[in-house]
Image (cartoon, rainbow, N blue to C red; front, side, top):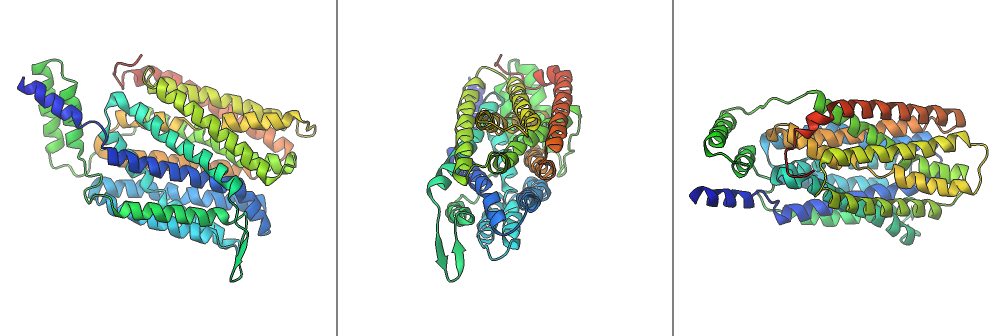
Length: 447
């Protein structure tokens, strides 16, 4: 009876603290607003400053490039030294400064500097995802990651919707504020409010040890007193030893997840980058139409996330991950059709672009991939691996936007689309080979 009470007590600790969940949900929502508040108007803004689509790619990718470099470093610092609240507050200050710089339209160098600085602030995302991995059970983790991604998606829907109705047109001491730099001003205010909220976080925010997590999971999964008690004792002894630098795993499953996360985001980011160009340059649509395309895509993505959140109660992450890969091949096919019909644009292409952005932009691989990653790696490295996964996402965005800025011709788009199909096929084959090993990773009650 005493052991049953211990199991019940420790099991209650497995549920994520409500304040952690709320804080991360607000952060994800704000990130979604930022990404899709800026993306539809970025080309209009950069073009008004006399720059080309190549400079647009530089501005957008500078955000992701700094996140690639800084995220693993900040994640490593959080794992080794703690002070998580201090790191989060610092990144929020950087976010406010970055969006202020982005809104200054005196020179094209300011939006470039703004996105670069703002990318540094993304580094705290990996820390927060590491906390999710530490505070959730294996049974609930997939659903939790999908739920958090759904809050990000809600922000992506709110961003274009807000941008469609809120546009400033003013002159403040020579500072012109218009549809191009308005998103920077709005986001600066949003992150400033978030910064004030971060200052009120508890001083011990995120201070949860990996030892506690392993003890909880071993005890609550016990079915045999002798065998599992011995396992728990050995695991506790191993984690209790003076080992400040646990080894970082690097096996075929980890590499496969990084590969798939990279290429799934590559496909998604390609849709984000190409949609404004296809709409405004090929179909000759206006900025409001681009915003509506993004809005429809975000609403579709939100609906799919809700479906996937429900499905996470019945299916494992492996199958959800596979669904995201199947979804992407449809988007690649639609992009290929645009390439082959480049010289023969008709009203059908308006609907094709809508289907392309709706199927291509949703990005589900990160949520299920992060959950799988947390199950095959040491919990003491949670922030590092979640930060590295997030850095992989941003590296993919950098690569896709730089590449997409050079292929906006018929031949270039044809070659690009066929290349995407090839790398998609490689990922499917690699994942299929390792699928059974992933099945044995998360042994839970889902079918």
